[in-house]
Image 1 (cartoon, rainbow, N blue to C red):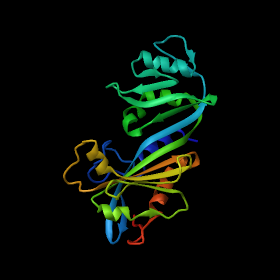
Image 2 (cartoon, helix red, strand yellow):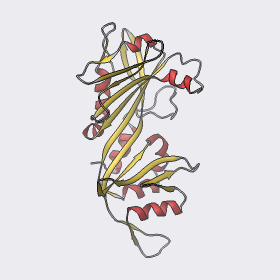
Image 3 (cartoon, helix red, strand yellow):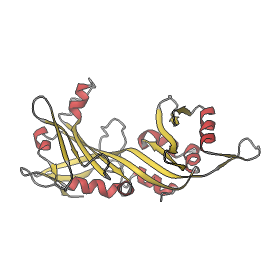
Length: 260
């Protein structure tokens, strides 16, 4: 169960920002977590990239301009958003827009249960709305809201590519490596797409270079770990993410040792 306070605490994280923020959303859910790898201290910078909240739909009573209260269902609420210029209908759902017209959230009825709805968003992009009237407006749509999915990304900067490629998750899960034309590991997956937890590790700097994106000169290497959590694991994302990090091991280097 997620109330307003719990939702904001989970999104804001449990620590204060520390150091220079480098990732593209410029927002982190906690302070850097320090690890020792082969006698080298490493700071992992993590952010929540996606949250999906599912809840039972309820009628929404809306009072506007001192007029009589009116009762709105799910679709009518989003029609009001559209009239206000902050939403647009697309196929089976609605897109929430920021002041620049960019997509920051998606909402729809659950496909196989019309009595439930879901809201899917990047908390870094929707943050300005979470403290205002629009956030409360959305929250009033649901009874018993809960997390059904959470995607967390952790960035590792300026460690040797060969150093990172050595590591594997030692948990008994499926492993799918993807190699480049030079025979070197570029991407690795642990767990299936349908499982409660799937981990992806990939060479983010290489990806950005292929896309002709500008990478600061001081970033000599950049790898990203993406942890995708569903169902019960999504509710426990904070502990599951760091359990996943501590599951990495290598026959050539020391196991990750959590120091703070």
